[in-house]
Image (cartoon, rainbow, N blue to C red; front, side):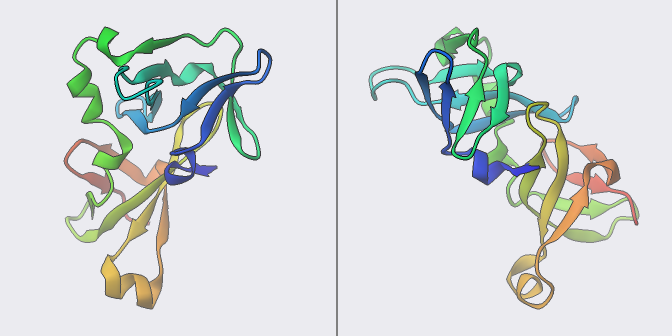
Length: 160
């Protein structure tokens, strides 16, 4: 399992061709499938639009780089219809999101997601309980099987 914050900033490369695609700037989630749908990387310069790559092209996470299929296709974000709707599903939109139990109790706030690679499946969330709670109890891990609702506004988890 890999934390989302570990994936952000990682170099994406096609090792077969020796091609650098860029560093991951954002991770777009598919909340219905509960997995990563795509990665966004910066353009070649500030004049060029960002690059979009479907996560299905990721093969492995090496020691320092995300390894992609030699046939990985990248397009510019200008070519994506309704791009602004996808940005709302960027991983940073979920950080700090409220997590409540199915009985209506505040459980905490999303600190980060854990993913499997190469599937991109959400394996769980790292949960913060606020500054004092983190100091006294530390962060906790909620496995994906306990997540009953994943939306753009909150996450609902089942009781243990």
